[in-house]
Structures are given as C-alpha cells and as structure tokens.
Image (tube, rainbow, N blue to C red; front, side, top):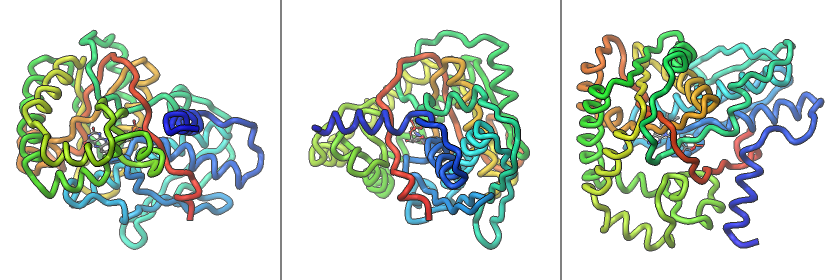
Length: 342
Ligand SMILES: Cc1cc2nc3c(=O)[nH]c(=O)nc-3n(C[C@H](O)[C@H](O)[C@H](O)COP(=O)(O)O)c2cc1C
C-alpha cells in the first residue's frame, strides 16, 4: 500500500462504530476507550491515558503531550480530557452502561468513570461521534433554524460553564477583530511558531507515521514534503494571507459559540470540554460543521478583552468556536488504543 492508501485505510479504521457485537467486559471497556479517543483535543496531541479496571475507567492527563507555549496552564489539555469523557459516557450508554464521573484534581489529576448496568441507548450524539470533525474551511452563511440554535444552546449547558451563542453579524464582526489581533500576535511569536510546528504533519506519510498532530489536509491546507513544509512555515509564512483566510472563514459562518469555565479550575475546564463535545456532536447531527477560532483565548490580554465583550464575570473564556454549513475535509487520525491504555 502507498501512503495515501494507508491513510485511507486508517481513516476507515478510526472513524467507525464497533464492527462486531462485543460481549466481553474487558473488550467493551477497551471499546469505550476507543470512542473516547475520537473526541476533539487540542492540536490533536491526544494528551490522555486510560486505566481500565472491571467497572471503572480512569482518564489521566499525559503531560508529555502538553503545549506549554500555547496552553501554559494546561486548560486546553484538561478540556480535551473533558471531551474524551463525554464521548466515553455516550458510548457506554450504547453498551448498556451508565457512567458516573468523579474528578480528583488535588492528588491524582484523575477522572474516574464508574459504570453500572443501564438500558441500552444509542443516542443521536453517540451516532454522531464518528462524523464529528473540526472543519477549518469556508462555510456558506446559511442561517441555522432557530429551534436548532436553541437545542445547541441547551445541550451545551453544564455545571459551572457559561455559554455565549450568537448569530448576530455584529458579534461575528467584533469577534473576528479579536481573532485577527490574536493571530497576528501569535504568528509573530517565534516560540509559539516553533511549538506549533512540532505538531504539524505536512503530508500523509507524516500523518500515518505519527497518527497525531495537525495533518495539513485535515486543516484545509495543501500537503507538502516535510522539509518544504518546515521551511515554508519558518520563512514563507504570510500573516496577512492567513488573517484573510480567517476573515473569510468567520464571515462565511452562521454563528459563534464561546464556552467559559467559571472560577478557572481544572474541574471546570473538564466540564467545559464536555460541554463543547456535546455541542459539537449535536451540531454534527444537525448537519452543521464547526471549527475552533481559539486565538483570542490563547493571548491573555485579548482573552480578557473578549471576556469583557462577552460579559463574562467569573472565570475565563476557554473555547471559541464558529459554526455553519460546509463541506467535509480529510479526517485527522488517532493513535491506537494500545498506546494510550496503561
Ligand atoms: C481544547 C481544545 C482546543 C482546541 N484548539 C484549537 C485551535 O486553537 N485551533 C484549531 O484550529 N483547532 C483547535 N482544536 C481542534 C483540534 O485541533 C482538533 O480537535 C484535533 O486536531 C483533532 O481533529 P478532529 O477534531 O477533526 O478529530 C481544539 C480542540 C480542543 C478540544
């Protein structure tokens, strides 16, 4: 198989529901981990590890995969664990299990999910797990029906997480300005660019050998030989062109949603990830695409300005996402579960 064929094979093997009926408890637990790894996660670093016992799965951070320059307090790392938690709970219901979440961030940095038997439920959110993707491309401006916006808002509600959803052009225009200011700031920051480059996979060979990181085609960019990609990213990167892309992307979007973690605690970053993941799955079920525009969240000064604009009183804006109708892009990959089960 050439690298394109291998990539296509891996995509099919990654983004799928369970192949066979699974009865054995240990195999079910491994399958729940597989579903968890299909969650969105910061830079596709897959910063998680899973410990399985007979009735509990523990989700742990993998700090070897943190991104200190972009995410110095690890709030996106913990939000990613929240995304994985939500997928796992939905998949558990499809296997007739109810997961109960308890979080210990003081001693062990662990999310414990204890399972008990429960009626089988293959919810539409569960069905959408294999179709959700972050789609960084142009959308078509089409408005989203009001009742669907209401559902999206309701499904995103979570303890200690505030939601701001808007389809108002004025909000989109103002948020766009924060994105451009933050993107310009980040791309001039050499340490940021260096760290980002470590997670870029410029072609299918690189994507399939790592099975993590940001694959160019999946981020709406052209594939390149790695050495050209690296050189281009170091010397040929055009901030104006990149900003124009964001302007077009945001202008083509139907709306934006911001998620804010109250009191800025690890627990609430996890809750924020859960909240986003539910939003993303429901949006996917409605045929909507979405993509993060987190730049303002990653530059502290602009994060505060955005928080003031959105009238966030306690905590901080953790995630900023645009949504709308658009095409599919090539998929991102995941490492095998044997790499993440400890
Ligand atoms: C907490 C968090 C932060 C993220 N930040 C960004 C971001 O700043 N920009 C972006 O384009 N995508 C961002 N993403 C999306 C991830 O890059 C994406 O989930 C990952 O590459 C896997 O791709 P997939 O979601 O399409 O499977 C973020 C995701 C999470 C969960």
